[in-house]
Length: 379
Image 1 (cartoon, rainbow, N blue to C red):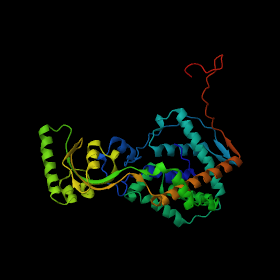
Image 2 (cartoon, one colour):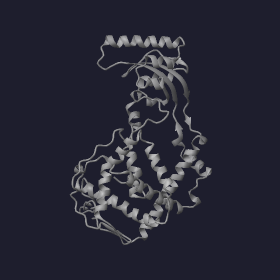
Image 3 (cartoon, helix red, strand yellow):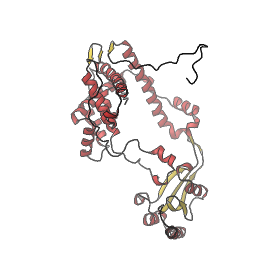
Image 4 (spheres, one colour):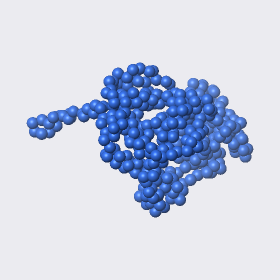
C-alpha cells in the first residue's frame, strides 16, 4: 500500500490511475505468448489486468483513531483525512477492506500518515510556486492518452475514487511540489558521459547479451485431445506449407494464409529476435541450429506443428556502450534525483515539529538466552 511520493494527492492522480489503465502490448513486440516458455512468460506478464479492478466491499474500519492523528508544525491531520486516504488506496489496489486484519489496516494507516506528513511539509514549502493551468491540462491529457476513450478514462478515475475536479487539483498540487523540489537541486543532477561510462565499465555483466535468433513461423494447431489420425492430418498440412515455402513462396504471405497463430494477420508469423530460453525447447533447438534463410521441416511442440524460417542471428556478446549511453544517463540522473529528494525530505522532517498519535508498531519478541547465554534451541 506504500505510495512513497511527494504528495499523497499526487499518488492518487499519478500512481493509482496507471494501476487501473488498460494494458497495451509494447510497441514492436512480436513474440506471441503461446510460444514462450513458462518462465519467460512469467517474466513478461503485465502487472495489471486490462479489466478495471472490482470495486471493494465498503465496510467500516474497525480501528479507533485519535483526532487529530498528527500535528505537523501546528497543522493538524484529521482522522477523517487519513481514513479517506486509506479508503482510496484500498480501492486503487482492488483489495477488500473486509479482508484486511486490524494489524494490516494499522500498518496501512502508518504508511499513509507518513506520506500525509511529508505532503504537509512539502506543500507548505511549495506554497508560493505558480503552475500555469496549461501545464496541468497537459499532464492530464497525457494520462487520458493511455485510455482508448474518454468514457473509459472517466470510468477508471471513478473506480479509483476520483473525479475530474479532484484529479486536476491533485495534478496541480503535484506539479507545484515538483517545481519546488527541482529548485532545491543544482547542476549536480547532471550526469556526464564519464559517469555513464564508469557505471557501464563497472557493471559489465549487466550488459551481457545472449545469442539470439530472428525467425518467422507457420503454426498448425494441435489440441491436446486430438486423435493420432488428426495429428497426422495436421502434419500433412504443415508439410505442404513447408514445401511451398522451400519452393520460394513469400513466407509472410504463406503465414497469413495458413498459420493458426493468434494475430498472424498483423505479425505475418514474425517472432522477432529471441534468446534460446524464450521459446519452448523443441522450437528453440531447431531454430538455433538452423541456417539463416532456410526453412525447417515441421517441428512438433505442445502447441502443434511449426514450419520455421530463420531470418537472422546475433552472436552472444556485450551491448556496446554507445547503444545504452542515453538509457544509462537517464537511469543515473533518476537515481541522483531520487537520492537528492530523499535527502531534502529527511532534512525537512528532522527539522519539523511532528506529533503522531498512532500507536507505534510492536517490536517482535526477542527470545531470552538460556543460562549459558546462548539462545534457546530452535530460536
